[in-house]
Image (cartoon, rainbow, N blue to C red; front, top):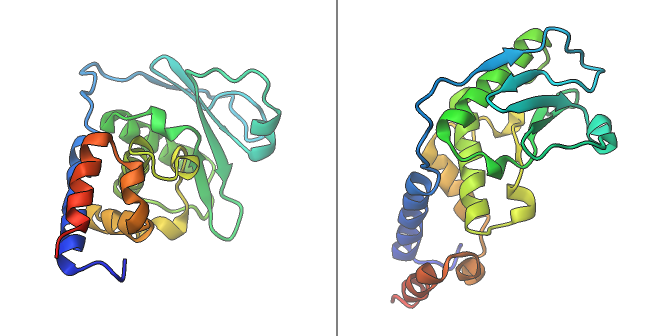
Length: 199
């Protein structure tokens, strides 16, 4: 990024902002979501924490996830990793959930989980939603798909994603400018090549 001129950085920032605004916007279902909490849930059991629309939400630890044999692709699997120095909750395959409404509803379920089973994990819905949407954008344009297919909602990332602008800047900092065009759809590659030839 150090070699980019201010004009090129501004264009790249603008493009990232456009992606952030338009890619994740998928029409939300107008129907109210039905969330049912499982009152018999326990941190040590492999049962779901809540049912959400047509999916079950499993909040489990890493060992439970690795030993799970019956993974339903319609269910949402969340890893509870709140016991370390940097408390974290990881949404597995978060890229599958694109609706802002669904993302916020799932994040509110996580806050309810934290309320019932308190820890040092401390995130705001706004910051987590920004982080999730940024991961989805990166996954959609094929940037580090192994990392961006899931979203880690750890405490250290709260400040990074407090604003959408900070989120975009974090994306740009992690992209090698020379290889950026490799990640983008074909119609955008031509534009990127033109941007990098600007004097």
